[in-house]
Image (tube, rainbow, N blue to C red; front, side, top):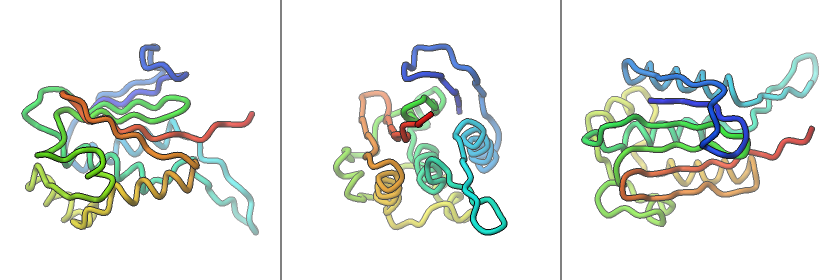
Length: 171
């Protein structure tokens, strides 16, 4: 997997930070989570005696997008999953077409097709998937609640692109 923080809104800009993430499946997921935490602000509000973290984007939604990329990618297509953190969005580029005849509307409706049953089984054993097909719908709901915007799903001939909008920062 390749993770990059790109300042601005243009993917062609040189990344300010980039990391190639390799290793065991659950280690990759953990390292990507750390990369996201490093580059997404987590403001705090004081409540009582302790600060309360208010992440910009729900970790549950980010985890869902990442797990989907790992679980449903086409492993016959050579190339990494690419994660780009831009000022206005996060992009996750997953190699290969969507499985079988799944289209963007089917994904939004919760159609559940497992392309890689062994990987999906390992993620299930780790408690990272529900096997219910509810992940994309949960991600859509959480992102809309956090940002007021919908996710983008772009199914291309060579990859699936998920775009997660970020909140506009007020300085």
